[in-house]
Each structure stands twice: as structure tokens, then as C-alpha cells.
Length: 327
Image (cartoon, rainbow, N blue to C red; front, side, top):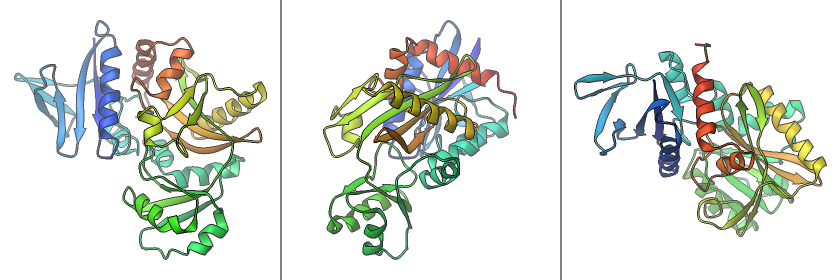
């Protein structure tokens, strides 16, 4: 049987969510088919964690561990790290150097999609619609009037490289802008300020299922808060309606755009993209390449709606990764 390492944790504010995602993967991968191991990737160190919560350090030279005097090595890695270093390309590049297959996209695609500003800039020449945006880096002069002139009010201030809505603020009045910018800088030294798009928000999961690019049933997001923030995502402050209550024409447009994006970027593995439908036209907000896999997460909800069990979803990811030969 193949040895599967499930990496979870990470170095960002999302590490607790990632640990939950990793546990879900561990619980649903078929133990009769694979030897499954939990690997915690944390700022304090990398560890294999056994059933009794004993920790065995990972040797970063070859991603192995010594357990009871035996060297434990892996055939494939299931990536469930949200944020850095699992979603920004660092782990992908590391495993590529080790010629160890892993379930998410390649390092370039991970780095590009994790950087909201770069992703939107790359896709604009292909006609992908996005919000009007304004960029700031730490240390830049903040010209409030220029920002408001560019994006209008209300607007969203976001860290450029983070997930789970950490550091995002909806700004309704100019007096709120500086505090929102500082809040975003707490997560990242690059930020993006975007115009408000009024419409229906949909979340769309895509992955390669049995070799074919597959779009999962879409989820409509109806937040009790001003937007789909952390509370809405993880603390029940939203309704997530799958399938989304959108017209067949809107559904077809979103499906076409999301497949085009997946193809343009030469994506692999899971992705979950967020759109706002404005007058029936999809505007891309962002793409996640390691979407949440907890019980509350959208991607598993969509897979269930499509009749794909978590066991089948995760098996497909492992088997697809094992077929990779592009090292």
C-alpha cells in the first residue's frame, strides 16, 4: 500500500482551520487502500503525529521520519495547508525538488493565485471581468482622496496574500479607510482595495475528476454580515445554498469562465473561485487552490451535491497525484 502524508497546519492565521481540514482528509481516506499519516507543518517544526499524539520530527532533507528505529518515507503528499507555506507555492516547489508527487497545483500556479493582485492582472487580458482596484504596499503614501476617486464607496480593503477573510474590511465612509488599511497590513505588507460589486456571490469548485476538468455544483453565498467574512464562513453567519439560485444562462456563463481560468492557468488539483454576478455577468474575486475541507467548508458541500463522497473525492486526488510524472 502507498504511504500518504497529509500535510496540515501552516504558518498563517489559517493554521487552525487547516488542522481541521487535515483531520477530515485523514478520517475519510480509505485505510484499507492507503497507509495514512498526519504531518503537522508548524512554525515550531515539522512533525509526524501518530494516533497517540506522539510527535516525530520530519527530516527536511528528504521529508522522512524515524519511527521506532525505522525510516518512514512517503509515496505521495495530500496538501491541506491553507495559506503559507501550502498555498503560496513553497511546499509545492519543495516537493518538486524531492520528486515527491502532491495533490495540489504546481508551485507557479500556487504562488500566482495566492497573490490576488498578480492573478487578476494575468487574467485581465483574457477578458476575465474583475472589480476596479487600487494597490498599496507598506510604506506607500496613502492618498485617501485618490483611492476613493478610483474605487468609490463602499469599497473593500484586503490583504493581498491571505485567506479565510482575515484582514478584510468593508469601508462605507472615508473616515474608516485608514483603520481598514492598517487592519489589512496586520496580515500582509501588500494590500488591494477594490470597488464594491453589488450582485449575487457564488463560489465554484473545480478539479480534475477521472482526468476531466469538472465544475462542481455552485454555491450561493448569502451573508448575515456586510460580506462573506470569517464569522460568515466558519461561525454560521451565512446561508450557503447549493445549488445556487441563479438562472441557467448565468450558470453557463460562470461555468464557462471558471473552466477557461482553470485552463488558462494550467491548473491542477482542487480550486475554488469566488464570483459576484452583476447584471448576469460574472466578476472574479479570487481563486483558492487549497480550499477548506472541514465539515462546514463549501468544497465538500459541493462534492456531496454532485454525488461524490469525501472518500471518493480524496481518493481521486491521491490517484491523480500519483500519476504525475512532470518532475
